Image (cartoon, rainbow, N blue to C red; front, top):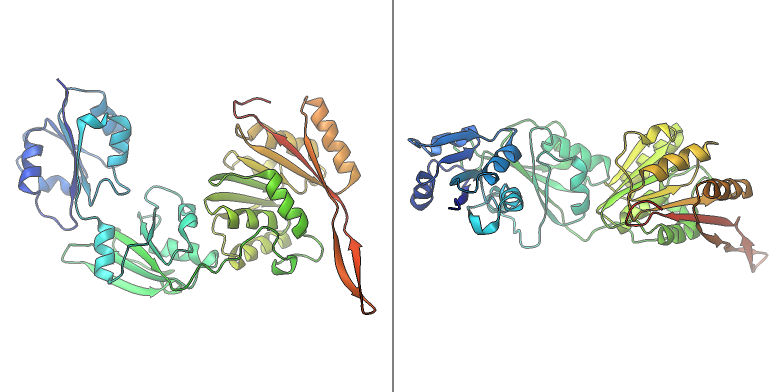
Length: 405
């Protein structure tokens, strides 16, 4: 006999379960819930299992016992960034019944007097702050928090990535006597302190102010004079590199981070790690992150290949500089590159191109080469002149989707 699994939502501030939900619980042999929800099932005769820190383990236990009838209690609507997704991944849907309730997010928008028809959402519950990056730019955002990723951490993240024009609304202890709704500019929340039971709304007016690329003007970036991947090269390099909509990019020897900036602008779900050894370059990367509001850009201080060790494996790698360690850097990048990914080396010097080709031959790799020879106009004595730029050769290596090259 197959046991039913009930995933039951608990409205914010509820002090008991609705009668039909309680009847379903009473027919179960096991109830799993946060300890604070144990009082919702007084007199339950079966086994109570606390979920704190072990939700996946408990769901796996239920999944492994097809004859077990169980209930999982969760705050709000369990199908909206909640435990229902995990349960439905591990347990056949024919065995599962989801009981929705009012979401804390729905209640927060209502309490704040804000429409949520076109809102975007992110969950930072047990997830990195960078998960907020893909939705920044929307006029209304709902954010699920946790004690580490609290309103103060969210405010600091927004400020560092240039999104200081949001208003933050913090909804604490929704449905409880201690419920509190607080509105403030993002800058006013950097030292926030309050209840761990909160959700955050970010509200701003006007369209997304970020420019569209590729090939943004060089003068728009903070950089040391001349030390920037020129707009013509940047545009072609991103086309050749073709980073995914979601995934990881390494920009090695990033300089000003202009390639990573444009990659993030075109693909908000991308996380780009700009690796740079110089203090001046890192300062420019941080300033460009703020200036272009690319929250998915992560500055990384250090020299490749050592600085790459702690980064997540990349789906795409752009190598703009190697500090004289070309073979070691390319070995590290190629070894870590995920299946289906691409590695592009920008060779300005003939020696760099020759060394890259030698590296490829030693490993039996056949690269794709693209040479960019561009010219820019400038006025001379009332006339227009075209000045050629230094040619750049892009050397691309693609890893097959199946794995090894």
